[in-house]
Length: 289
Image (cartoon, rainbow, N blue to C red; front, side, top):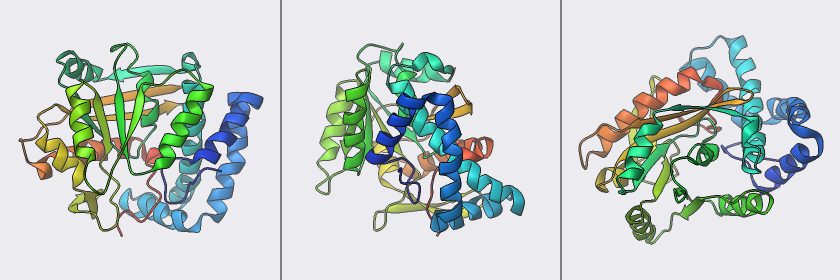
């Protein structure tokens, strides 16, 4: 089963289970079974329950009862995003409807052939974003920056079952050689996507207030984005209903080489979306330490 605790996406085994479910019993019944899967994590995922309850109760100031309900709902919606990605990537894009909010910012950057950096968050379902980009250009390529080889395994597995993906994964390396890979991708008018809300232990960080409490944010995404002379966009894909997705794309406003200003702009937009979609923020760890 997917790694709910301490993670924001499922592992390969989790995807295989969901693929079997969607293929053999269909979307609606898969959602029905998800009721019991979410209940299991609600009852037994003590570590992520504690931190997620704190998020609802203290940071969003939900009532105690609403915070408990929020725990269950968060697990359930997270499972839905996994199932949806499998269905959409297997050629069933027409099972969902889509709303494009700010996609002109992405189109403009692609038309100018500069490449661009997209900074997202562990909110919603960004990994279906490439299916929003189909009309931008046949050669439009998104590179997801990750430290996890599991992401590449999931991509390869899904591609065996589905239509070809133009999404690639770029691995962060200790020798910093990934910087040259980033530069080559941008020179080829490809887009690079990083998340800005997942601080890794021992990494450099910037501490800023988020939802009324200080938290650590990784310095790397904002340092690099403020140094490369390409457009920087904040991009999120949120689930509005069972079968409707909403893409938000905002152009970052900051001064060159000002990573702190870029982070502040990012947090302003991200916080608004977290408050609007509180059950889709999938950071199942002690975010505020």
